[in-house]
Length: 207
Image (cartoon, rainbow, N blue to C red; front, side, top):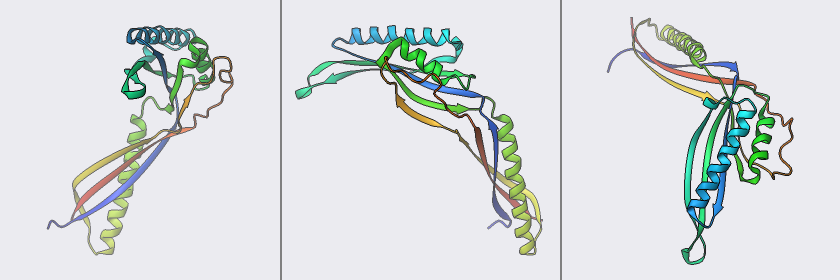
C-alpha cells in the first residue's frame, strides 16, 4: 500500500444574489388537442408580452418545457386534452417579483402557474475560487497536524479530487390565485446571500 496521507478540506463562500429566476407555466384543457395547443400558444404569447412590457428582456424568457396529454374519464375513455408551456424567466430586478407576477396573472388569469422562484448569482467563478482556496488551506492544515502527530512530514501532492455544491437561498412552488384577486403588488421576497461549497480530497506523500 502506498504511504502517505489523505485528508478532506471544505470551503464556503457567499455573495449577494443578483438574479431572480422564475418558472411560469400556462395550462389549458380542451376537448380537442388542437384547441388546447392553440389556446396555450395564445396565452403564452400574452404572458410574454406582459413580461416584456414590464421590462424583462426577450433573451431572458425561454421555453423550459412543453407537454400535451390526453385526459381520461371512466373506462379510460379520452375526455379531452391538456396542453402546457413552461417559461424560464430571468431578471435582475430582485424587488419586482410581485409586479411581474401580477402582470402575468392579469394577462391569462387562472391559466397561470408559478412553478419555481429562485435567487441566484450570475457569475459563480469568483465564489468557487474563494471556496476552493479555503478548502485547500483547511486540508493542508489537517495534513500537517496529522503528520506532526505521527512524527512524519508531508511531501508532494499525489492526488486531488473536488466536489462542488451550490445552495440557492430560496425555492418555492405555488399556483397563481384567481385573476380577480391576483398577488399583492408589494409581495415581498428576500434575496439574501447565495452560498457555494467546495470539498477537496487531497493526498500527500510522506516527505
